[in-house]
Length: 349
Image (cartoon, rainbow, N blue to C red):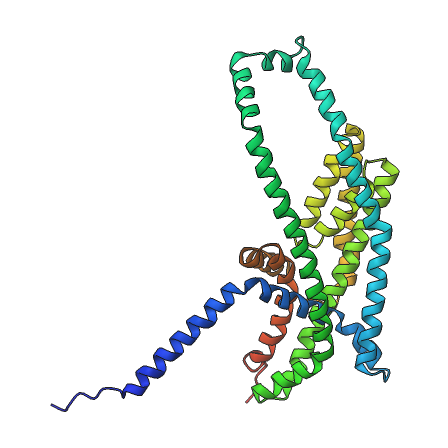
């Protein structure tokens, strides 16, 4: 029998080092998941704005100047929309908070009236005992509420910092996007990959810009309807409808529920009219507006789009659900290139 040969010790060392390195990278990725999401969103926005930058560079403009023009124009548009839509929404939210005391006063009047069911319920001994316990625990609740307020302010500050970080990273990605594409192509050793990546980024850019148009149309039409129907807080509701329309598959339904709920505070007739409006608008968006806007952006089937949204939502929540469709459309381009030889028609022998 021949002697059993064992692999040299250095192979075990290399395998162990690779395992430890992989585990360390995975641990760092989990710890820095928030930062990675910001980087991913920034790259997605840069890819979305790339068609505008390319429009200027194709006419001989330097890329730095083109990026500056796009960023300044986008900033002006955002500030204008904030002045027109966000400022009234904030005022209406403040009005909503101001109306709470009147609502509580009406509730107090009902509670103090022993002739209605609410007053009789409150006067029960077990309910009175529960109210006393609640009042005893009120100081602790107030102190915890103060801590919640501090935490909320901290989250708002973190949100502002995240927005500023995304804005800065987006500008850097916009400036370096051609170099990134060429660098990846050289790294893969195949110059054709540069064209594939540009086509994939074009899919992302078309989807992002198209989604902005869809959301703006949804918010604008809803705002006009809410004004005509005299639904309270029209700007605030329209802003919510536009934001929820970002969510694939279910966003439009959530926006409709938001509008119908507020319309119910006016009358049942207004609520029915709101349901009719959202049904009509969804038919217009699904069969006329969206197909024209996304004609060249994606070629996903409804089933693949729904599956992508589910997987993205399960993996990264709302951000994953929103980013799933453009990422899937870009991956479709890559997969089609990788497996092109398998699906190409064979020459007849």
